Amino acid sequence: MSFLHDLIQNVMSYVVIPALVGLLTYWYTKARSLLKVKNKYPNIVMSVNKNERIQSLLVEIRTKFGSDRSELSLIHNGTYLIDGSELLKISRVAESAGHATNLQAMNWQNIPISLLPCEMQLLKEYQPVFVTVSELSDGKFKRLLISGGVANVIVCPVKNGQNIIGIVGLEYIDAVQKPKDMDDLFKYISIIEEILSSK
Image: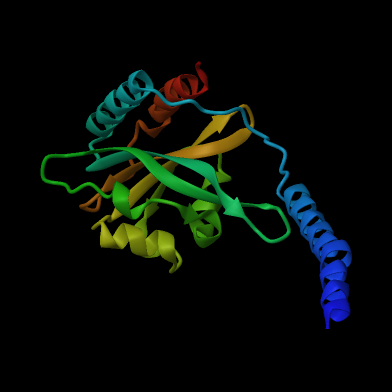
């Protein structure tokens, strides 16, 4: 009995446990290599000063263009898929709303961009786009806007170099005509891009 006990103990000590450690080490290394994704964008470091400047600009944008809400959303990495590729998400990081308008930022957090194909398609215009919400294809983007009581929306890409890193949006509760001075948004977008890229 003692011989059998010693044999089992030796097998566990010299065969099974090292094999398990080796297997775990292999899968740990494999997982780490899958999760190594090259960072395409420089880190955006936010600060109180940056937040205050962006918030001030959003108030100015909302006032100038007569919208009920204005907001900045940024694209970020939420997690990884099993093949190691990034699952990109978007979150509203700053928002301004008129006195009689409720804030909606809490409903626009950590949304996979794969759920917002309609909004992502609008960004391909690389310019401010005015949209009537009722004319959008059904999906999360349209439903979130409707739940916020939005009739019209303007979306404009925020870029770092040639890469789109976020969106500035203007929301109108009551139906309006397309603003004639919409191109003036570029000036504000440029300032926001400079703030985000600054140290």
